[in-house]
Length: 296
Image 1 (cartoon, rainbow, N blue to C red):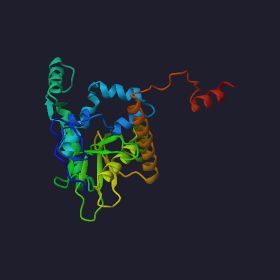
Image 2: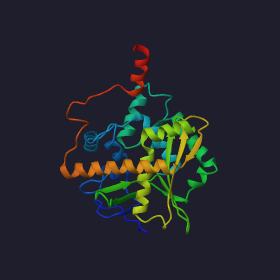
Image 3: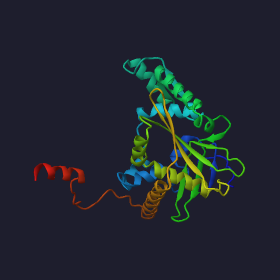
Image 4: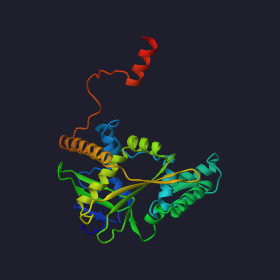
C-alpha cells in the first residue's frame, strides 16, 4: 500500500504517492515539473474541447464563476475541507456595499455567501447528515477529504493527478470506496444520466479508480466510486449513484484517448484546435430529419 507523502516543499512533486496536506491552489497550479493531467483537464482535451482550449486554460488564470460559490460552500460544510466562507449580511447583491464586501472576500481567497445562502448550505449539510447512507459515509473520523494523488501512467508515460473529495478508511479486507460530492438542480435518475454523460462524470469515475489502483490503495480488491448528488433547493434531496460497468468502460476509453492526445501534444509541443482545414459540415441529424419532413 502506498504510504502518504508529506506535502512537497516548494510546491514540486517528483514522486508518486498520496499527498494529504497539499493546499488546493498548489494542486490546481500543477506541482509536477513538466506538467500532469487531471480528470477535468482530460475532459477538456476531448470534444467539445480541444488541445488549444486546454492549453489556454492551463496557462491563463480563469475568471471566478459566482455560480460555483454555493457548491464550494457546500463542500466545506459536508467535507470539512475547502476555502473559508465569508457571510455577507445582505438580502442580495444589489447594493454597492454588498458587492464591495463580496469582492473583498474574493481578494482574500474566501467564498462570499449571502445570509440566506449560508442558511441554505447549512440545511444541505444537515440533510446529508440525516441521510442513512451518505451520513455514514461522511461521518467525522470515518475518512479523509481532499487528498492529492499523483502517479505516472504506465501506458503513455505521462504524469496524472487526482483529488478525491472523500475517501472513507478502508476496513481490513474491505472494499475501498472513493466518494465524490456534487450539487445539482435535479437528482432523479433521468437527470443524473444526462448529467453524467454531458459532464463526463463516467470518465471522472474511471480516472479516480485508476488513481487508487495505481497507488496500491485498494488492498487487492476492486474499488468502488460513488457519487453523492444533492439538490440545491429544499428538501435538498440526496441520491447516491455508482455507475455500471459499461459506463466505466466507456469512461476509461475516453480517458485513454485524452492521455494519448496529451502525450502527443507534450511530445511535439503542439496544441491544435479543431481543424486547420475546411470542415465539410452537415446539419445535425435531428434538424436534417425535421426539415426534410417539413420542406421536401
